[in-house]
Length: 309
Ligand code: MEV
Image (cartoon, rainbow, N blue to C red):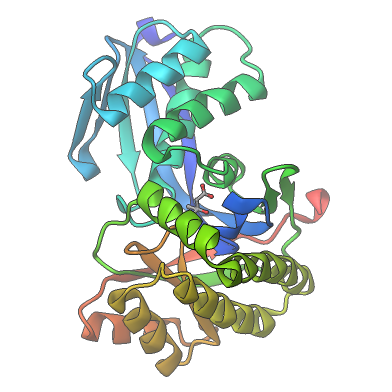
């Protein structure tokens, strides 16, 4: 059935968490990320280039000069869809470092592709999403977009792209929100300046890339405890390159005190979110965060189905 007959076209983008390797990935090292089950569902109907996402109080239109409006233009130019009105149902918090812009761009691009009446190649969708991400974040590595598309766990490098990592058993992550928005472009620029000034900062980033490979190994073995230790070391290195904050450190320490085997900030840092691994103690972690004045929730990383391992 066509949109003209009332049935909308649909697209979905997953939220993401970077498990290990944020910032390192910008400088050519590896990172490991996971698409989470929650994300953004977008419907598209014939319209005039508008996007509305009620949960975020967001209303924009292609050509209105706002970042979202410019991202919409960038997507529509590449997908060559007819003029559409997009409506988003967002289940991930805004500006929390959980890949909201990439999830939104993937969902919009997929809905536009479905409405185009053509078979749109994956490279075109990828280019549309990357163009939208450049509006928001300057020169992103592309890891957020890759995770938003995949919805699974993968190792990403700028040179090699996204390689899926098989996950043996589902993993529950506690996600704690600092309540402070983060600004990815500003954080990425600050880390790049520190790296130019101090060789040790570059070495910290290289170490984060090595830890990403260790994390891929731990995931492949189902070693949640080992992954937790890796989270802890990664948080220390991210703090060393100055992307943690008092709120993020508080969340990390509270999670460990409540029984987490490891915790770290996730994404660009400065604000945004932390992730913690706390098998059998997830409720304790969320309760301790709440007592300290922070919201949190759990998200599942699904096991890779046996047929695609
Ligand atoms: C942001 O989710 C991850 C960063 O590594 C930036 C990027 O990779 O584009 C901080």
